Image 1: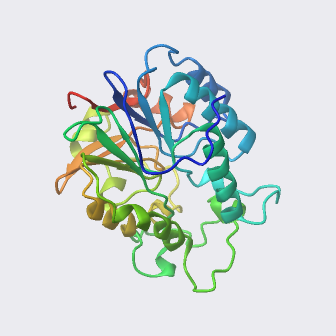
Image 2 (image 1 turned 120 degrees about the horizontal axis):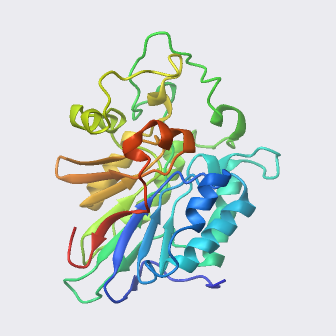
Length: 306
């Protein structure tokens, strides 16, 4: 295990022939997913950086083991927590914010990057900055900034949504929502000067369009009619928030990686490339044949461009 003590951020990291890969929603509590992670090559990625965009496990022991494992495979691992990481099932933490800070400490100890880093060539016109953006979703009842789109016959209580039962939020003196709390943590990175292109990442979705498949994506997946397996569940209530998109644009990111929905995307919208590459659940990989062929993390960038 590599031990790092209070590194200064942002930092630059140089490595030969570097590449940047991305994956999210690996859900390492599931035996088949753990096996998939352990099957990753111990040699293929040793000069590379991994963006891990949340939802590894709500169990900190599992999270620690998986982060340690991935740090042994990749030269560098960049991470932001997803909603699963902030579940407080057994009341072992006072609330989800307390658990978030414990995860931050764990990442610092393991050498996992949760703050901006520059990877690749360190000369002025080389490399790329990786900028993590902490995030949460904005529910429509919480004010502007939600990605909400009304759905007939939906259950607005979100009774089937696990976050409803497992997340606990302390009362903020200024009335901030969880989404606003996490967006505020990113502000220190928005005013910095970056001397190379920026790739940002979050767990949650930054734009409403990303929730829906394009006709081309449906055709590639061999789907003609989309079946809704959960007609009373409205994902748009918990998808993300527009504040993430605002921060992406303020950064001037060329690419943004995200997860959460378990739908793989690679699109360019208004000049920014949006990439989602989720391992998801085994049943999802079996159902969607085009997603059942996930051989490894998704290549987002190389020193020679992607």
